[in-house]
Image (tube, rainbow, N blue to C red; front, side, top):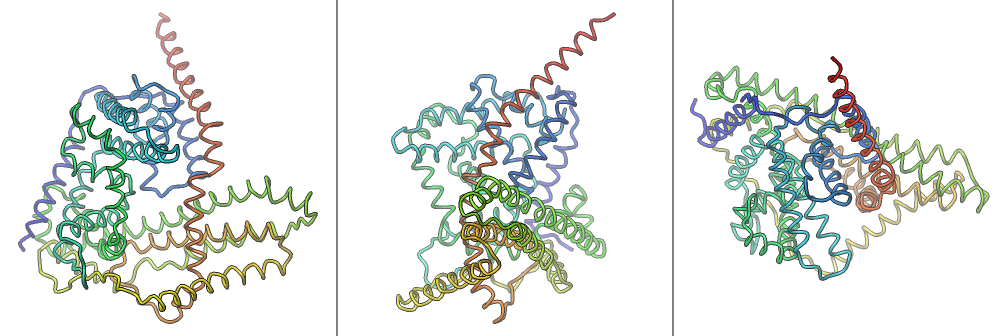
Length: 528
């Protein structure tokens, strides 16, 4: 059977990736002390509970956090080496695997972003300048991660799926969206759906497309970039927040599973994929095996996500309980109730457990659709299915206001009924407010985990009348949780404590420990 032209090109990129990881070199690598690494790695695990992030963002988040802290406490000269050593000690990259030549490469990247920060316009409020700074450092973290772990496979698969989706996706209804805008939004949607890339990483990829010399800009280019940085930020944000972006993402996310499975098979057979794909039985068996592997990993990720996200919320809940809720109820209102405290801890946990356990991850029918999708993509058989995106219709003002009124009533009913139930079992007003906040946070986190659980499901959901009623009363709580989640991530007290009162002294101790052990080794070697 003849392979599709696009799949041949994709296979060549996977071969290139395979050669890059197989190539051996005797070049010196960055090494850190094993004892110091174990201590730092243990800290990172503890921190992962407090500041939980989805697994695919853990390394990038760590790079960003360490970068921001070191910029505040270190000079830009000789920045890269201790920065890389800390990443390795924390277990984010393997010891003795990163080449020493990467120090100079990362140093140049950091200096580029230092220059942009120092020479960007300083007019505007403190908030605007701080947002610009955080935005740029997030992009810097993305570039550093891709420099240390080049995503050859991921980028090739993104490009492959993007080209396929450009042919299949059609916009339904009247639109002023140009083909160029549509294709750009498809590219953004594929990055979000296929590998769950965050906004900073997608923005970095957009910058690479916009400026061909972004990785090694000339002094003139740097000066121009620095002066127009706020305008560039706004322009790229408009692309990410395009009205079409969410609709395309929701559509693409429902059809990305076959591409992921093809990527898995190519990873196992990069050099001999063409020969392997000629055996239909072997190809079907490969799809089935990789589907099972992905399904098992998906269930494991969901379980860990449920545990870590719940622990993160509960730790914050306990902190607020001891710092605010218990003292106020005991000494101000004189109405502390131990039972209500247990209820406020147990109910969100049980809700999270219920949301995760009730998630549908796969069906037999879904596997058949996935198999057909893989075969279509691999052998280029044309599909009659066109993926349509229905654009928002112009709504009548009166009808729109009526619908919004119903949603507001459902909002009041949802929180009102829960508040009444809590009041009837002895919750104080303060305890009710805190309970509702954490219930919303857990509902939002659980819903996100459920959405991740649909990673391998293909096609649209079929929801009946019962789901519509359920959504009417649950969506206000979930949306409130989404808003709160953004505020918590921005103003999380525990994160501030970790960053400034614990992490800086701890990292100083780890660096001292490593240097002390190095000193002892040198003295030991001097003994003859």
